[in-house]
Amino acid sequence: MRTIDRWLTSPWRRSCAAALAGALPVLAFPAPSLWWFAYVALVPWILLARSAPTARRAAYDGWSGGFGYLVAVHHWLLPNLHVFIFLIAALLGVLWAPWGLLVRRFLGGRPAPGRGAAALLVLPSAWLMAELVRSWQGLGGPWGMLGASQWQVSPALRLASVGGVWLLSFLIVAVNVAAAVLVSVRASRVPAVASLVATAAAASAAWAWAPRPQTDGQVRIAVVQPGIVAGQDSGDKRFAREEQLTRQLAGQGVDLVVWGESSVGFDLDHRPDLARRIAALSRRTGADVLVNVDARRSDQPGIYKSSVLVGPEGPTGERYDKMRLVPFGEYIPARSLLGWATSVGRAAGEDRRRGTGQVVMNVGHGLRIGPLICFETAFPDMSRRLAQDGADVLLGQSATSTFQGSWAPEQHASLAALRAAETGRPMVHATLTGVSAVYGPGGQRLGPWLGTDASAAHVYDVPLAHGVTPYVRYGDWTVHGALLVLAALGASEGVRAFRMRRSGPEPLVPPARTAHGSPARPGR
Image (cartoon, rainbow, N blue to C red; front, side, top):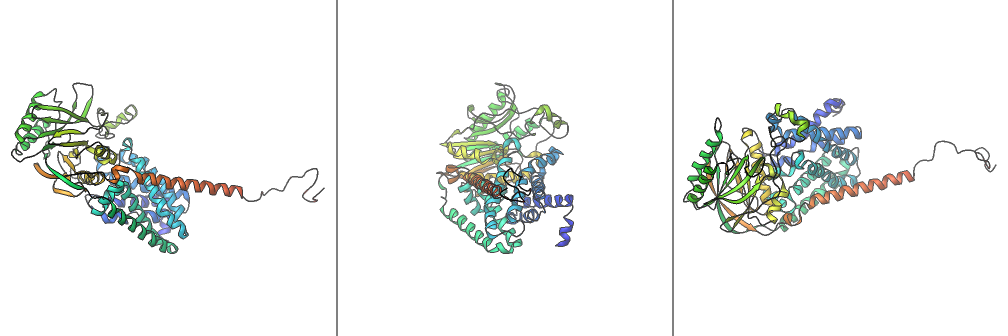
């Protein structure tokens, strides 16, 4: 142990160790999907921060660990962003500096049992604040939230219906803190065990109390995944492949056909021939076709990514324009300053335009759908809004072809399970090149995944459920609770500092002489 302490006296070695410790939780996400590892993955990082010799060093440990965490969960962006991924991770990693500081504040040295117990509330709350800030769309969005690692765990999905992915992140960090206390703080082991038992009891009560989605119908939805289509005229070739696959759905009684993101590379007003061909497919299959158009619009300036519903007579007028764009991938923030990024990585040569509001579409057959495009499926507030607005099915249209051979397709597909569980609505995740997946109202997987090697059309029997989950009704109450915890901490620290100033030490300088007395002869 002393050898390790001596090795960590070097600031650079310590920062590297913190970055590696921060990267460990990535193993809980797809593709490895070691979901159980999430509950201990933060322990090395916590032990490092609590042993920091100074508060400043603890903040650096938090920052370095945040850097490692962000690089790890976004490592598949390296071919696109190049050096930018390290710059972005370094900037956003600062969000974990207060977390590292609080780890030392509550767990450093030999903390009293009360301080160790308080850490089980404060440290998860501080972690949620870091996730909340980085979840802003302009900072890259909520990709890789710690709670998202539990996408295939049925009890966790049940808890997501109560407090969303935020509640899962909170509980995972709390378990990690308790595990770190058990390992390193002998005096606080009993409170740590008691807190673990209380957490397990509360989670079990929420799991038992949360209403289960009651299915009251079923629809047949077909996902069309053309696979990789490259080379010259790839847009026309992709369309032809999608057309061929969709024709195979005739006679299968489908209620809706879904194509992936950027499945149509031309504005349908500019290419009425394509609109007619899609309408013919709708008549052949007996179902509307939801396509995704990535093109310059004819009715207004700029390039949009849009979900467009096409029926037997052509486009129905139901359209959703993507609202939350991928930084650098679909627009460059502060292009006048960062426009040179296009010469370094695969940054957007021209900014896409944003939509102005979410849309629930009427498909027919009494079915209402709520479309989301690409990484919008990572935002729990967007799917929650669609459920509130009456969507029966959530639909994500995505294209992860740029990231074939990485963990990105599996990670993206897993997010739909959480959105389904949070809202009590089934979700379809349709892609161009995989992974396409469908989940039921409780987040349970339905049918096969269409992997990155598949070029196919598959029909899914999707159960419908209605009712309102606690998360849809009450929203991000876990985040609000974390804010209250941190506000109470700030108030108590302020009161403590005020009392210390009031009862500070006597002044070290001797009292001044006056006309009526002196230090040597009082009273004179």
